[in-house]
Length: 177
Image 1 (cartoon, rainbow, N blue to C red):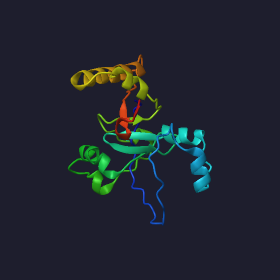
Image 2 (cartoon, one colour; image 1 turned 60 degrees about the horizontal axis):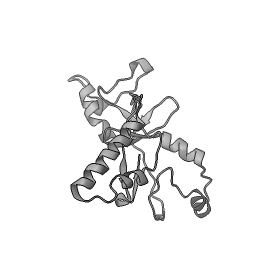
Image 3 (cartoon, rainbow, N blue to C red; image 1 turned 90 degrees about the vertical axis):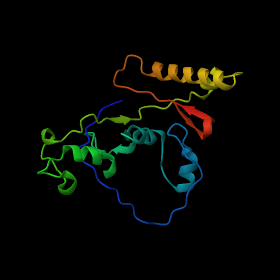
Image 4 (cartoon, rainbow, N blue to C red; image 1 turned 45 degrees about the vertical axis):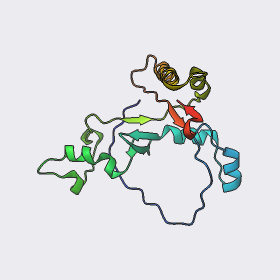
């Protein structure tokens, strides 16, 4: 987990244009590059997907993105509303007035706030399924949860600034760290 400074927030306005949805929700490690490029006329490659992944941020319970090489994070206003309220005073209401620092030293920090960057994705499906093979009920749950705990712990060995999380995708059909 890398801690970043949330310097400012903004709302991203999307224009209403006609679009058709393609089936599927793809992780960065399993994106159908060739199909997307052929169907959509794009020029996506793994390097581009890696840049997008490394700019994917979770800030509190919200998604966010790194939008500059200096680490500026963009997220929705409601994601930082509590921080903005806590930084405001009776004389200055930042939610109403906004705040633009002139220098980095003037930037305000959200105490206790952290931004988590998605650094890598690993498919651990086989390992988690093997832990519970042949088991049922509580024995299955205990074995699966213990293996998930080991996977998360192993991924963070010796790195106090990292956090690993095993997530279940496709209703448990795929499990990623």
